[in-house]
Amino acid sequence: MAILTINAGSSSVKFTLFPSDADTPRASGIVERIGLEGTRLKARRAGGEAVETPVPGADVDRAVEVILEALGHPQHGVIAGVGEIEAVGHRVVHGGERLTRPVVLDGAAKAYLESIVPLAPLHNPHHLRGIAACERHIPHAVQVAVFDTAFHASLPRHAFLYGIPLRFHAEDGVRRYGFHGISHKYVAGEAARFLGRPAEGLRLVTCHLGNGCSVTAVRGGRSLDTSMGFTPLEGLLMGTRSGDIDPAAVLYLMERHGFSPAAMNDLLNRRSGLLALAGVGSNDVRDILAAARNGSNQAELAVEMFCYRIRKTIGAYAAALGGLDAVVFTAGIGENAPEIRRRALADLGFLGILLDEALNESPAEGPRAVHAASSRVAVLVIPTNEELEIARETRQALAEQRRP
Ligand code: AMP
Image 1 (cartoon, rainbow, N blue to C red):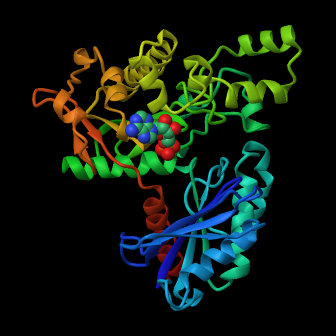
Image 2 (cartoon, rainbow, N blue to C red; image 1 turned 90 degrees about the vertical axis):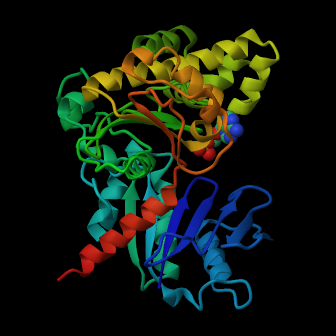
């Protein structure tokens, strides 16, 4: 039997198929460019070559259908039929205040997800479409939702409330939710395993640095604070997002330039961050680092701003945790950019964080330590694996459902 993970986004549906009882995927892939020219399926079975198939005009429903056709293909497939799929684990960005652990999607859970679409208008509607498609094409399978917000449900009130009248939390749900929780939870678990220590008592700062960036303080395997807030805009500088900015500056710009809320939202989410600051016409950190090395002062400043925000958040979270055992780097930038790791940790020797330059620069893959032997705090690079975390949590939800 098998577990399928589905991540349905605005223009793509990503999938991975796991055996029900093991962590090694049997196949994975994506239907990309949904709603655009050139919609295609890219699929790969374990140990095989990637195969590309055009699926012109496919919507999310059709995308799920072609994924299932590929998985069950008589020559290239990995299952005899959809009957082998016993559960589908859906990545869902927002679970609101109520869905704080993986849930089997019944009518009530889906109605709640519909009701909180205004909290995640760019994500949850696509997830709901993915769920509906899987219910239609794999009706016998148990549908489970795994939430990016759920890991941060353990934030104490003093960390999740904003300094505005409490009724805006009670009536409008305005609070810090935090995101990237599936990734932060996965790497926190892997860090404990790598260090050979129980999660209990372990104080970690996990840095998810990818297209979006967030830092989380983790104590005893639970999220204590996190840099993203009501939306994924707060906190660190990101590829195209501003991160922290005084809300009064936002209001000032709106008034001065007559920006509508939608225009301001677009400016802060899609036209700010490294893209705006570096001046190289790209938000890819590889391009920005290359421009800085080639003498662009503007790109250099953008890199320093990016690293400085990470550095000061690590310091803040060391204080929130009352000490620090390890800093963990993950995602596209965290895993692959030694210069960013080095600069983010510069001058943190007073916290007991000392990098080993050679280990940090080494192009090794997989979970690894990059701190100096004399460092009091471990510095780890741990490739994230959100699909595996979703599959594990789906497996757990399935087991709980079946328990008498
Ligand atoms: P993710 O969201 O985890 O897929 O991360 C995507 C981001 O990782 C891209 O926008 C790149 O900026 C960054 N990235 C990927 N590889 C590298 C690399 N070798 N060096 C620097 N940044 C990288």
